[in-house]
Amino acid sequence: MNRIQLRVKRRLRRKRGLRKRILGVPSRPRLTIFRSSKHIYAQIIDDLSGRTLVSASTNEKESKVNPGGNCQAASEVGKRLADRAQSAGVTQIKVDRNGYRYHGRIRALADAAREGGLKF
Image: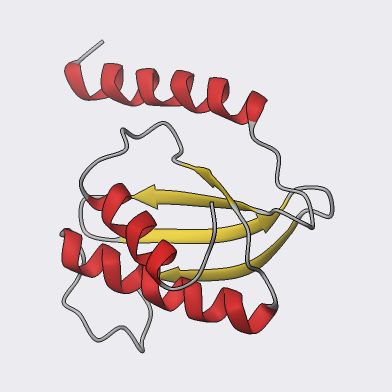
């Protein structure tokens, strides 16, 4: 198994461990984050009904920043997600970091969402 496959396999194992403990309910939905090399995606999900309530990414047409492999783009996504969540009536969330370490782009997105009014 090469290095990249091993890295992905480890992340998926961490993801399964996290998902056992985090469940998004209507009063506190789950914020899940996915990052690729060029973009970052975030969704707020109600797991009981299986619905995505709000989503934001750097891959959207109204995205003002350059394709987002950086912390600045991640913070813009976090601000946009917080605005959309406020308009959808979501104020409290649980963060699912999806197996990624809580630093860099993940942390920038979460901090921007916090500044936008979401409570973790």
